[in-house]
Amino acid sequence: MNHFVLAVLIGIVEGITEFLPISSTGHMLVVEQLLGLDLDADPFWRLFTVVIQLGAILAVVVFYWKTLMRFVSELFAKSDLATKARDPLVLVMLAFVPAALVGVAFKKKIDALMEHALPIGLALLVGGILIEIIERVTKDKADTPALEKVSPGQALGIGVAQVASLVPGVSRSGATIMGGLLGGLTRTVATDFSFLLSIPTMFAAAGYSMLKYRIALTGEQWAVLAVGFVVSGIVAGGVVAWFLRHVRTHTFRLFVVYRVIVGAAICAAFFTGHLH
Image 1: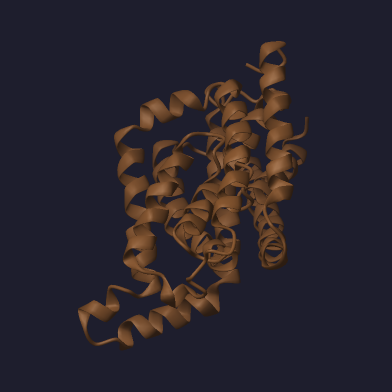
Image 2: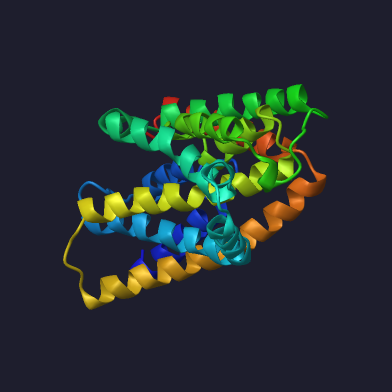
């Protein structure tokens, strides 16, 4: 298949799945296997999957730019440390710490899980069921209606929940949003916090991977990277806008059904030899 067509297809998959609670990592691994890409044999495509994540996360930065600038301004305007400690940006960085520490400590074991479809299928399936349970348990119990009302304890709880997303198939957004709901945040606030938390999390992960997979690129490869980056960013921007509108008036049932169906299909494909 033409490399530019591959770049568009993979960019679309990344843009759609990165911020929905359906696991971009899981979808990317399955797509790579279906397309016959061997990332270990071709380091360019390994780098490509990292670069297009930056395209997706830049879409979030653009979407939340005014909010981020307001929080930065308010943070510097605050005079005492106690007040600064409850600033949304500080709490986002607090939530970033648990997954960063665990990710560094157990990176090899986590990478091993990404080599096979079965753990991803099971994570999608079980994760979908857990999302349904958590939504039912937390229904009508939210008491935090704004990002400015999030406490350090709630932020740390979301950060601990994000650790689960290191398992391929769990979904970073799914884990952090559910962590927010369990902590008492409304669906909208939990989603906003999850998206803001994705900024340092994904930049750190992508930065580490880019340093690890440094290779010399040809002119065509640079062009392929650019196509994937742009497609991923545009698609991700549209998905973020739609998802934020969706969660204001809908539950996560749509994603529960999707995860269960796709998770079961991946498990079946693994046991029949269509995926490995």
